[in-house]
Length: 429
Image (cartoon, rainbow, N blue to C red; front, side, top):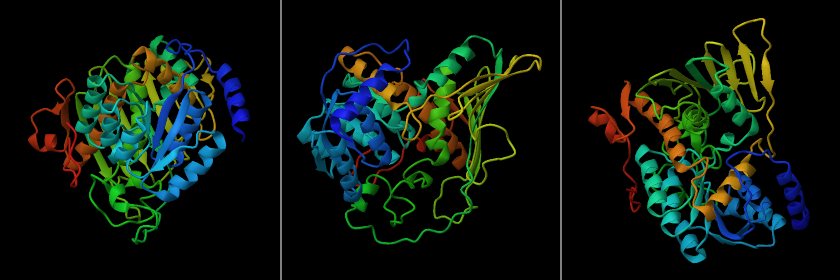
């Protein structure tokens, strides 16, 4: 697609964006932008940024030249910016001095790159989950505040029209007194197969890719795109999908975090070398309601009606299912009342509303306003996932004190809020 046509279409699409109370018109400006992590999702984020007409892509950065080459070819079709390419994010940030850094790397790199960017004056568009461990998230939020930078999290569901209206519906009281919430992700990935460990492909700096995480033998199930199933680099399905749905729940409730968490998991069924839980249940105890998380990689539960992902809000007046591709549905307890539905309105590729995240981000940079998907929301939603996995690892319940950022009365558990980094990388503080 020619750049002129691309921007014309983007302008028309922007005119049709749903008006939201926290989005205001912004003045055009060119922000020097770098993308760190040039895979499929990083390109999705960058593509929507280009549609705004307000960013200049000065650099692309990745430790995998194979991904970097593909990304550069695609970006060159969308813009005349002709960005430079880098393998080391530190060199990229120091030389280009960007206004915006998009951090779309695997989870174990989120903290070091986001903090490095903000310390050098950049605002950050950060992919979720914001961190691999709890204390990394605390350090990211601290860096954002200390350096007075905008750090927005890619919680595009916070902006999606049907998610916004579902939130308004929940707040209206029409669901009644909500006493239980259930978040779930059901996929049928089958038993899989055991990956073959091998030498990294040419062009991939595997040592740098592993970075602060443990050095493991390369296999194509980890990279590209499979890292979420390896706990050395991510936090499984709970860490992948969980922050999206937990953010929706925390957005609805006035409670900041649960007080108690208990989790059980099963991670030895599939044939894969991956070590993330295939089956997991987590119970979160809030003051006014109980939240249950459930995920599986072994079945999409065809016996259940509706989507295989989402959140159920159980209230005294009925049940609201907030989904993804099919929008939301309210099932009243009174069978005489009408079932209410609102369809989703999502953008391609990959059915998202990243364009609305960009609008908020770009209007916050000149004003200094905190975005609707601010880093603090990302930290709380990510912590929900991390603490669920921590409980499963310990095999017992934990009591969380969000004000002091620690687990009550459990020295062993508190040690797991961070981890040792592989030299020469230093854990952030």
